[in-house]
Image 1 (cartoon, rainbow, N blue to C red):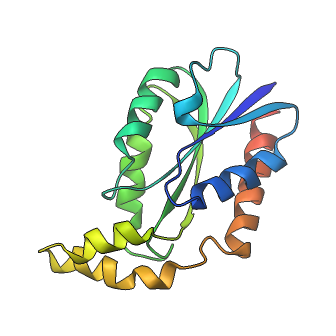
Image 2: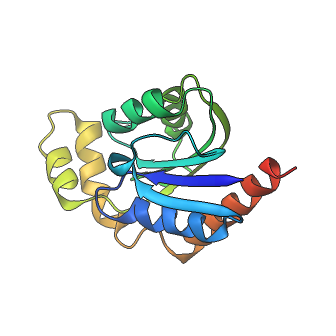
Length: 166
């Protein structure tokens, strides 16, 4: 079995999760940023990771999923600025999952990541009070994903590998 870990990162936090997942994969494996990938023809399984943008998958990730993941089994991993207990998070994650149209999503992992300062600055400029509140909460994301979230990502990878190796 040959597995690819494909990811997009802005602040480097999604890359931390990608590397944690990569370490847990058994068999032949590779890890690359999505903009370095030309095809996935030789891969049996793909982990695809990205930071949430605008409460959904970034356009670059949607394009990657549509172009390369059609008919493939995939597992998604998503970082975001919200605590995992945030009430509206499930709806946002469904949008992320919907971006993988044409792929078979076997599982999905999500965790809080650190918001980049330029993202915080843009959120704070919004006329929408809810969006501004996300910017105000931005400093609370510093240092995320923490060690516990990274370990949860490793556990996720082990669980997915057990599923696909049956």
